Length: 84
Image (cartoon, rainbow, N blue to C red; front, side, top):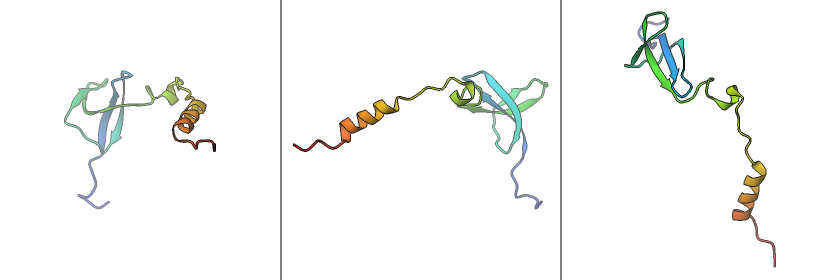
């Protein structure tokens, strides 16, 4: 590899505070905030809005949208008026 052109690739903790879930992985993302991990070492931490622990698809708590109601609402608001 060419030296000096690649970003630093190191261990980082990604934390989902909504689900109280965190995982350690390697990434080029960095942060000034740190956290002590289970192994006793300190790593940079990145807070994320959603992860597999809180996403409805992965948790099985997905909502079913009322598509028929949405279509009817759209047609009522923007649909063509019947000819008189």
